[in-house]
Image (cartoon, rainbow, N blue to C red; front, side, top):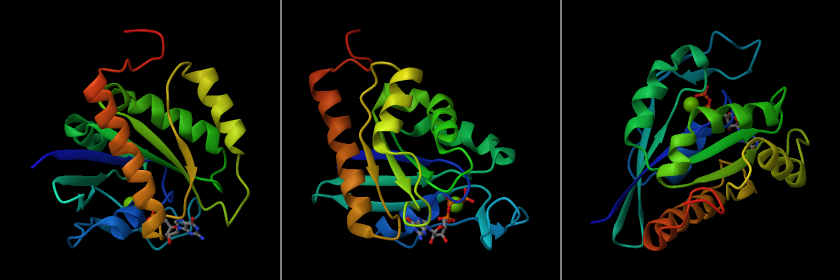
Length: 189
Ligand SMILES: Nc1nc2c(ncn2[C@@H]2O[C@H](COP(=O)(O)OP(=O)(O)OP(=O)(O)O)[C@@H](O)[C@H]2O)c(=O)[nH]1
Ligand SMILES: [Mg+2]
């Protein structure tokens, strides 16, 4: 059975745990602890180690879904989780103080996953606050990472269908790159 290992990254409160919960067909392994940073992101709990779930795509392909803790003080886990993954779903909440800076930071930190497989971006909590427009996001991506091909969606991680679209886009991207040996940066090999 073919297998994909996908990492959900992004800042605290972006919806990584929520997304894996929506997608997973097994009981999700969660490592939630009380959130002592409620002045920064007002939610009851935060991931301190990882999330883990699984979903079958088609009948053949198992996708392992891992989520990082968004808080930088747990970034020792980022190093561990980065090792095995072959693609990334980068979630950024529209109500973060500076969503474009978060996006650039996490893309830079986990850039190896683009090179290994692919990246798809989901802008979350757009119903809570109007964040950057898709045009502003593509402009920031082109300025900071020229030539990368990264689809961007607005999504609500609580909605399974929306997360499935995001995940399938990533899986197709990864498989196309694997099948056709597409360059990770347009124009280079
Ligand atoms: N209204 C709204 N709420 C959302 C949306 N996406 C996520 N949420 C909520 O925002 C919160 C996100 O929390 P988590 O899923 O724990 O976020 P996380 O990215 O795992 O955060 P850390 O583990 O702390 O890094 C949850 O309460 C979600 O229900 C959205 O698009 N709209
Ligand atoms: Mg979490």
